[in-house]
Length: 343
Ligand code: AMP
Ligand code: MG
Image (cartoon, rainbow, N blue to C red; front, side, top):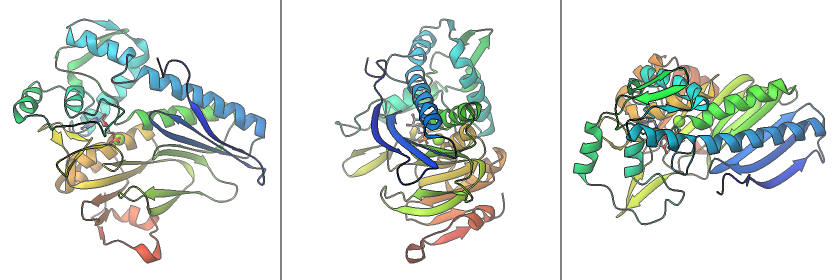
C-alpha cells in the first residue's frame, strides 16, 4: 500500500547553507506538506531528528487512516459488526478524544465517521464527481446518534455500545501528531523548533534571540491574513473550509460537519486557536467552527481556550481581547475586526 511502503517524498532540503543555525526540511505526509525548522543544534543532529519525526509521522498516518486499511479501519469494522477489538495503539487517542468531545458539548465528535464519508470526504480526490446526500440519508445517520460516550475500553479491549459509531480522527490527529513530535524533539535534545503540518503548527523555544513568527493563512487560501509571534511552547492551529471542500452547482460544502444536523458547518471560513496543547487547539478549532457565531465564545471558555481568531464568510474577523493584542495584520490589508468580550 502506498502509505505502508514508506513513501514520504522529500521535497526540499535546505540544510545550513548561508545560515549555520537554522535547519529546515519539508516532506509530504498526512495528505499535506509538513515543514520542520530546528534552531541551535548541529546539522547532523537536526537531520537525524527530522528523519525520526518523518518516520513517526508516517506511522501515525498509517495507524490513524480513516479510509485506507489501517488499525483504525479495522477497529471501525469491528464496531460495525458489534465485536470487541484489541488495539492498544489507539487507546491514548480514544481517551484524549473522549475528553475533548465532552469539553466541546459533542461539537468535536470523532464518532461521526459515517457522516463524514456520506459527504464525500473519505477520499484524497475532492474534485471527483459529487452530489450532496439526500436529507433522508443524513437524517438516518444523525438518528444513530454516534457519540464518543458509546466507546468503552477494558484493558486493551475496545468496544462500542452503538454500531453507528465510526471513528475519524481527522479533526485532531495533526494537532496531536505535532504534540508527539515536539515531545520527541525534546527527548532528542532539540530545544528550539517549529513543526508545521499543513497549518497545524507547534513551536518550542525561539529562533535565536527572537520569537518564532507565524503566518496565519487567509481563508482565500493564498494570502497571509495575520502574523503572530510565539515563544516557549505553543500550538497555532487553523481549521478552514479553504483546503478540503466539495462543490455542487456552485455551492461549497465544508469538510467540517455539524453532528447535530449532519450537515456541513456554515458561518466561519476559518478558525485559529492558540494553546499549548496541539490536540486541544485542533479539536477546539473544529468545535468552534461548528459552534458558529452564536456559541463559539461559550464553547471556547468551556474548553479552556485563551486565544481565538475566527473569520466569517464575509471576511469579518472576530477575536477575543487577548488574541487581539497578539495578532498583527498587514497595514494595507487590515480586515474589519470585532473584538469579543474576554474569554
Ligand atoms: P479540521 O481541519 O481540524 O477542522 O478537521 C476536519 C476533519 O475532521 C474533517 O475532514 C473530518 O475528517 C473530521 N470532522 C469533520 N467534522 C467533525 C466534527 N464535528 N467533529 C470531529 N471531527 C470532524
Ligand atoms: Mg481541528
